[in-house]
Image (tube, rainbow, N blue to C red; front, side):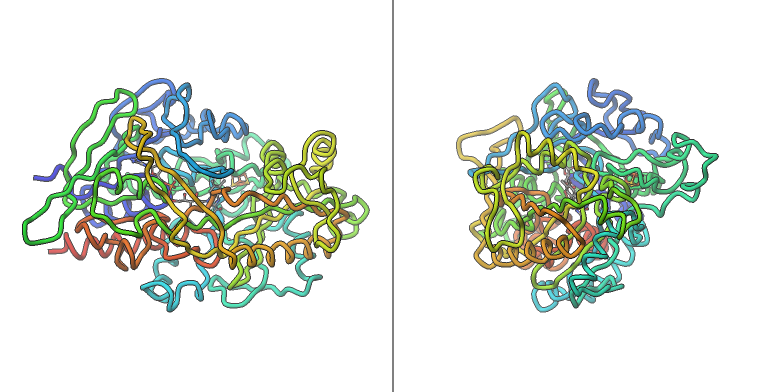
Length: 568
Ligand SMILES: Cc1cc2nc3c(=O)[nH]c(=O)nc-3n(C[C@H](O)[C@H](O)[C@H](O)COP(=O)(O)OP(=O)(O)OC[C@H]3O[C@@H](n4cnc5c(N)ncnc54)[C@H](O)[C@@H]3O)c2cc1C
Ligand code: SF4
């Protein structure tokens, strides 16, 4: 007999959602998460000691502990090798888990309860309808009620306007773009970012409330640095930035049916082969990342929500049936970054103040969407991260080709030394825009496993991405649009970083719907095996940030899984 009804592998963007939904339907759910749990009394020192085995009660959540651990210091939180938010084991004195790439790459994912949503900036737009309709095996209309449900639960709100959004709207209007006040984007235009961030704290402008006290109340403080984790709020389920560890996980625990086990790396899906039928998933083998012990756990259904690299890796390492699309078709929004530097005088005229202070407010509070090309978003990172993004380039050192005639930007490439110092001195007068390209699925891109190198969890993943010609063209159109907006807003100098194509922040589509899973996200080849993460997207959803779509799909998948296997 199975130990539980459903095992969910991974507690990130998708896993936390399906666990909560199935728990509410009355199923016994066990969530296995490879990384640590921050803010749970059962793991008071999550990076130093193993702590307990699992937690299943809302009362285990502890806001004081969470605040102690999430201090927003960039290196402490987001150092990709040793930070609290990294792809690695809870024990930070151990290295991160290794991935191999054959190109310049930055693969940015987190382990831990909340997964990569611990770091994410919470932008929660819907997919572009034209990227789904007549393209995916299900229609956009079928997704809408699930979008609405997730938007209400998180909840999603339009971002408030601070100086960087104001300046972006000004530039976009000057460049001839129009406001599109809609969630279902069918025409190009700009709008406030739909964000999974609570509305601003009601006492924000009350001078009698000290800053420290403000951060203990409900609502966003607009203090910025969301990417380093947000500790603002009165309780774990009211933290301003709605990563799944503070939104869906508390709700999952409240159902009383969901047990969550961190520090538990699933290394194999166990299947049963019945002579006359397809194989079925019946459980998993899990490895405790502190002790190295392995255990077999059985369930009536298994959900992979390990993300776009680890879900295909797990399939391949489990020896599941061959499928030419497993791990293939990776898209990553082929991103780039442009920065405009402004004069105090001009800023004064437009904003009524001399600085933009890009770190204030939501990290990405405004966007411009262009179905068919992708999206542009304002981005106000903390200074260390901003400086590191000037250092990533496919063009080599900027100093080697400081001016590019007939280009929309003034310079391109990696900025170092004196120029970087000057740029960072002007940091408060810069506006940056990140591009998310509607990049094309190409079967040559994706995840395979290394035939020679293994770690303690099996053969390691090799990740490969090279944009197609069409993706390159779309990215270059978006860069032109971004430069034009910055110029029209008054930028005196525009720098394009020209990021390497291997900057992987939005990984999607490696276990595609219609190829690896059906439209209900059940595997074609292994029954009772479902997927509820970014990997099931059919494509790059038009260039809109991916998580809301994953969460809408995970909500739908829970319904379909329940109907098929548990409703009688
Ligand atoms: C800097 C940054 C900013 C971002 N901002 C946004 C944004 O604003 N909006 C947006 O939509 N998206 C954003 N994203 C992307 C977003 O974080 C992802 O889309 C989302 O987290 C993906 O959800 P997922 O479930 O596919 O994977 P994840 O959230 O990565 O969750 C996978 C989980 O599975 C666990 N896991 C993996 N393998 C195993 C295993 N074998 N056993 C057990 N557990 C396992 C992992 O530890 C992890 O917790 C951002 C990402 C980054 C890095
Ligand atoms: S600006 Fe970001 S980090 Fe600050 S309170 Fe709001 S969501 Fe949290």
